Image 1 (cartoon, rainbow, N blue to C red):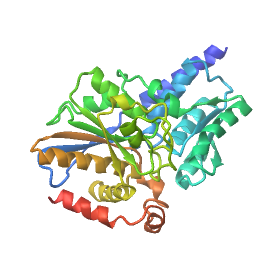
Image 2 (image 1 turned 60 degrees about the vertical axis):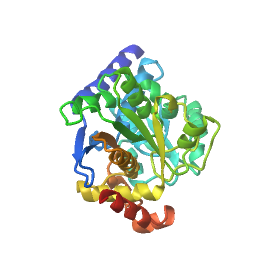
Image 3 (image 1 turned 135 degrees about the vertical axis):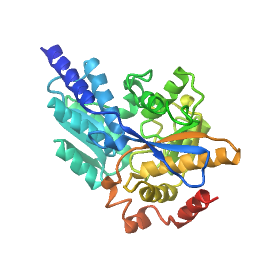
Image 4 (image 1 turned 90 degrees about the horizontal axis):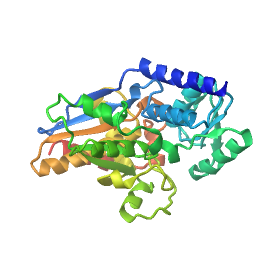
Length: 348
């Protein structure tokens, strides 16, 4: 009987996948870079509005096929928002209770979305408390702790099966430069960077992977030092960067990393709004800043090529925070210098 329910659950997730068309690859017209083509993989068009929809689907399938999730299992996840939104969606699809353990300062719009899908939010005061509290709740409720930070890199089939890397290269095949010179992305769990990095090597592409990391995250210093014991106070760019080195972050598949100041992330986020005509999240600003910096290196070397980066989620989730100038002044600081750097870069 338990196996029958698991079969139906997997079929429900696969049916949901078939109903969702692939996400768009948007070509950007960026001034000042004549021989370099920029692309945004728009993950905001998933049913739950972010890149994390892919991860949540994979984590549920991983838990079901491992026998960790049954008909009455409570699902617990530690998340700053987007993963929890997507996991709440799939919990409702399967009729399972869901609890997100998250920092108290998580964007209100994400909290509302989790609750919209029937999930509950359990708050902690500091971001580094989410792990132990999630484990405690799972024990107390006899539930399953999804633990995206451990299982993200192994739950996704990096060889293909329409993962994000496979999708990018298929969508690029008729472009002027079909094999990207660089794919640029930020890391939250590290699962997506592991998937893309492994796929590039598996297919023997010449593409390089650049992972950009916000202030106060440990991924960049870990990449440089190799010290897995590093900790920090945690990123101010919601959804990316971590206060500790996560098991899912695989530095050996990353070609280079760049630390991006928080002010640069916000300045680029706002500039992208003017270019696209719609709002994007702050992590997309981090990604695009890194893409522009890498493009400047190519331009200075007289090289042409293509650069693909990720539009992780919509900016509508951050109207009260990253799109609020007063909040940015208090929490991030001045961004005018980075706006000037962008202008100089784009009109060089």
